Image 1 (cartoon, rainbow, N blue to C red):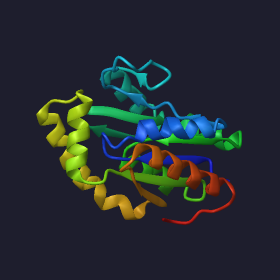
Image 2 (tube, rainbow, N blue to C red):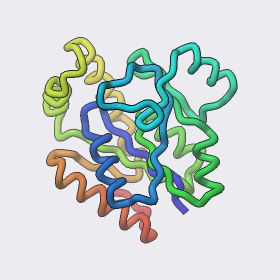
Image 3 (tube, rainbow, N blue to C red):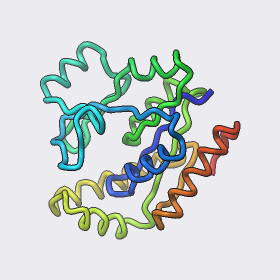
Length: 191
C-alpha cells in the first residue's frame, strides 16, 4: 500500500493549489502538517497549514529526533514529524505531503515501497519568475534566490515517480487527480 504521496515543486509552481484540488477528490488522504520557522502568511492558519514555531523550538525538536526529515530552505526550517508517518502506516492511511525536493527524496529513501513522489514543474523559468512576482510575497532578491534553487531542484526530477508540468492550472488539477486515481487502482509507473 502507498502510505505517502509527496508533492514537490519550485516555489510558485502551484503545488499548494494542486494539493488542495487533490484533497477535494481524495478526502481520505490526510494532510501532513509540517513544522516551519517562517512567518505565517495572512491566509494561513497555525496547526492547519503548518505548525509555526521559533528556530529555537525547531532546533530543540531536531535534537529530540522529532523529525523524519528537515531542511533549511531560504533561511527557514521546514520539517516532517516522524510520528505522523508512523501513524499513517499503522492506520493504513495515505498521507499527502507537500515538501521540498530533498524532503521527498528522504521519505522515498526511507519508505521506498510506501511512497509515490510527484514533481510539478512550471512551463519555464520565465513563467516561474512571473508567478513569483505576481504572488507579491517576495522581494526581487528573494525571487532570484528561489530561481537559483529551482535550477538545483531540476537536477532531481528524474528521481521522482511522476513529473508533470503545470502550464494550465485547471488541466494540471485534472492530470494530477487522474494520476492519483490510477495509482490507487494499483498503477505505480512513471510519466
